[in-house]
Image (cartoon, rainbow over all chains, first blue to last red; front, side, top):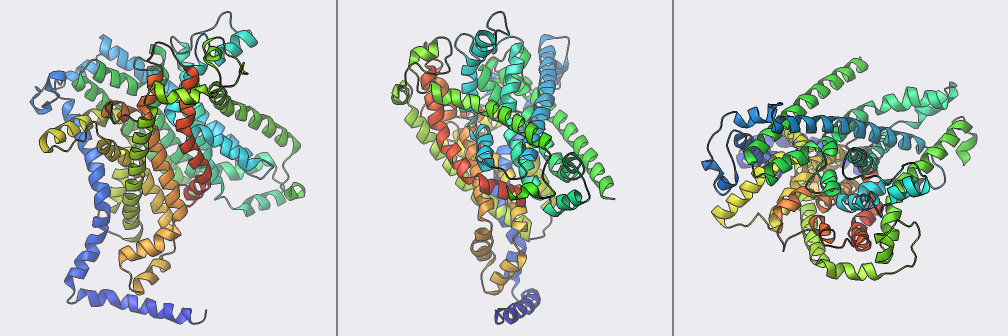
Length: 331
Length: 286
């Protein structure tokens, strides 16, 4: 043990002198040192460029073109159409714009409800499971199952449960509890919104649970002990220690949940297939249909750009608000 | 048990409401899982008629039939290749990038992290169409088949998990003491030697967590899989829908197939979830 301490001290002094030595004749070494971080970032950067950023730019360009199936092979040759695609998307009196606006409101309502419920369930469960009890780790594993299941496998099970004739939901609500006069349709009509919300919350809350649980582990135990000694009850401990400590975690969590839910395609696509019912017409599926079913890529791109702008504004506003809030609470 | 008499003992009312809440939540979580498992063992008559909680008889027939109704084995192999390759590439690339951000100060560092993270915000639908066109055009120009091939899907999926992986690993690498890799540098390791001999071994939980996340992302993706694959490269995400386009809906087979494709990810996730929580605690959630 004693022998290692002097070598480490030696090591520090050697290291301190090394940049000076490198500054001398070994130019290549210096270039390598400066270039290294960029070299390490290069693969990630190239891939993000190829798969995310370049397509995004192309998508924006495409939104100004009249791009139908005739121009797929050579999309550069498609004629420019100025703002026509945008005008069509936001003309709320015409069918296309009206449908888009409807889809937007459905998505906003769905997202707010889903994120709220996911967060509430996740936080409540994590707080309930903060201290140890018998069966806690088993329960924790169980709760994570919906998150671990592949989306299509989980959602297809819900499709089965929501079937009109042979599904579990109608069997319980109608046959067993007699709550409805006749079996309801869940995957078409107005009920489809609630079906989608149920599946989304079932699938999404374990993520909130996971993150909040991880956040709770960073709260020092002494805080609770001190509070308990000062006579703070359970409720006060949760209100005064747990929730404030979780604030930074929640700020990120809610933003991530919001973006994921708002952009969610997988759940509605597997639940309803290609044609989503009007009541559950989420915006991703709506744009997918507008592009691939009608083969009108230009209008689809314009809608995507509008969606991106909306998300940018919301995210920017959110970050501004929460950062300001965080700074204020730090002072 | 021992904490029961400590000053932190929760009041009785809390214990009761906790018990009720957790029981209800367990029910909510488990009912679909029960439906999946029990229906996969039912004869077809049980799943075609009115729903039954208990099967009239147990059969493993659906587990045999799923392989012949649709070419499930082929989809399985495709998914394994795509998700496996995407995971390995994504983790390696994320380790490099996170190491650079965590250990070096360089110009453009903030721009890089913000840009990479902001790609999480893009609606997949926005770059689906252009990416589709890019892959088709690259294929026409160079002969490298990205569209319809596994390679294109691997490339796409690995970028999906990359931002979150990099973000989480930066936090994790930051928590590995710098003295360790500085000592390795002094001992004559190059920067990469320090990364692989010191930093990576110290960050194994974080790396495992990232790998689990990357695999799950690739295994479960539906949108790009439905557009970017053809009959030979189809993955489970698309292939599983094959059971319901037939005239008869073999719900027992669908449930059996769902269970079979879920087992690898769920088992892996539950085995490794400890690492995920530890990784999140040290990295993302700090």
